[in-house]
Length: 383
Image (cartoon, rainbow, N blue to C red; front, side, top):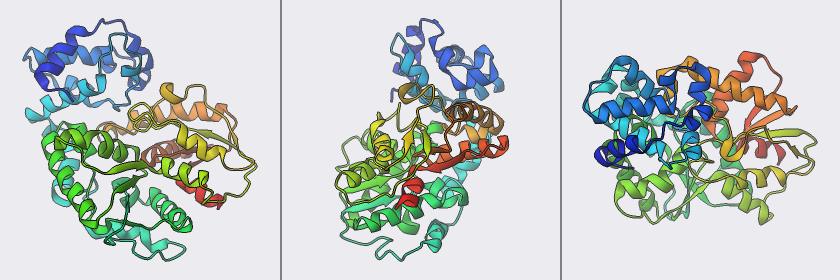
């Protein structure tokens, strides 16, 4: 992440104003105004770099972004637009902008309860109540090599609590000794980074790394792509040094378990399409492991959507945008859902709890018969 002076001031001059970024931006596709696309956002950043005050409309444009990274993928001048947007949000945060938006509610929840919903810490254990089998040492078991980091969305939203239930039972069936942080787990800090509050996120990072090392773990598994990206790629920057932990996304872990024949999925004669989460694909470079998992299921036919891998459309659920403009999130999700329906698949599978929420909501709103599953949930139903 660049500082404000070396980031915004320099990168806005590099921009060639070619418009390649506009063509792939999910927000611009939904709204159509120049100011809603990356090129327009860079013009707003240029104003900020010159010290000009931003209007409320311009502030809204800064937050109407999912941080999907697609604009960075196609930029011919190689601007790291994700870093640029985070720098710009940091600039707004320093000027008190968050207090003018619903983002302040999420920030206050994180400061008070260390999670995005404001739930009491004990509620992080609610997903464990419906496990089919008892798993010993599930919470804060000392001297355990593997820690499963559940994340706020999967741990606290009923719609996605099936994900930790599925993954924990998969690990138990594969005879993997693991533990979670239980009620002591705190948000990874990704929403704070998305608000430009890097200093507070760094404090959370230090606390969580220390907590995991107290257990004696050396491997951390995350099913949430945003948690995964934050632990693997952002924490070393925030801490100023490597944290010494091996960070694995759940799809990578499952692919290894299938290769080692520690899981035995049963045949599924069905057609499935796969959605690449932005934070797992473009922002973390993980494309193959989830596909390896699906292709390891006998009888399953995997059909790709028209745009996939590094060019996959965003689901709309990233970058804190659900807090700022939920209607825009729904519009972006409908566009991705339409591509999934074109494949003729019976199931839409994605290894991301937030993608599952946005796409399942879109499927429900459109009254389609397409079933949306997280990858862990889909694998568990085959075992």
